[in-house]
Length: 244
Ligand code: ZN
Figure 1 (cartoon, rainbow, N blue to C red):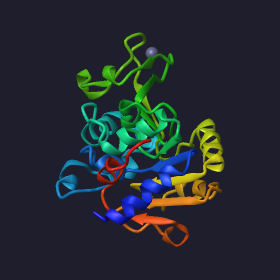
Figure 2 (cartoon, rainbow, N blue to C red):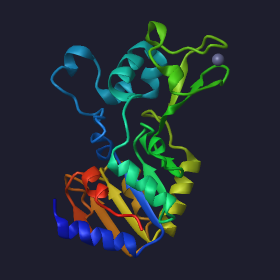
Figure 3 (cartoon, rainbow, N blue to C red):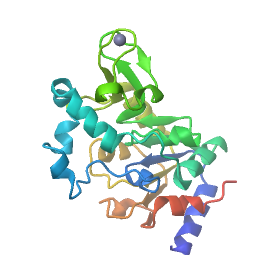
């Protein structure tokens, strides 16, 4: 851990008051949630299709059973707990220092940590809707359904998670609020994302503040414009920050 960099991050956080956090899969790895794109050695024995195909709208409509087999195996983690990164961000928000968390994750861990203004670009596993009658269901209802496919207790139709699948558009309101938060921010912390996936790369350009921090294990392609680059695990880094 680079203590000098942690100290600099502390000073930057101390001297700013409209901080926005923009995060990706790396924020949740310290909570034991793997990036679903990581295809391990067993993957091809268990699945006949690549993850991106299974998580597409067409696939969901045509093979919901196979979709949900993957969903319960690789996507949903009801029992995962927030790590120090989630907790510190919630603390910064409560202290009036941080205005928004914008995330590409769908696991709901920021809310579980206590964050309130969470803008989920790719939706959330916490909300689910019946495809026929529109009845809403929380994540608890989705736990281990009979037959592997969750169905509505009112009309018997298939329930779809409010997760943005491939081929589906992002929510306009979430995008609008993300752009506003970024353009009004005085400091931006980007964490656990390589910033190569749309819309992350494009959204970051709305930031006009004077402090850009990147916390990511790998390269992000944005190092040139950054004021501080940290490659240590984000939970360990933010865990050291003192909120004051
Ligand atoms: Zn229904």
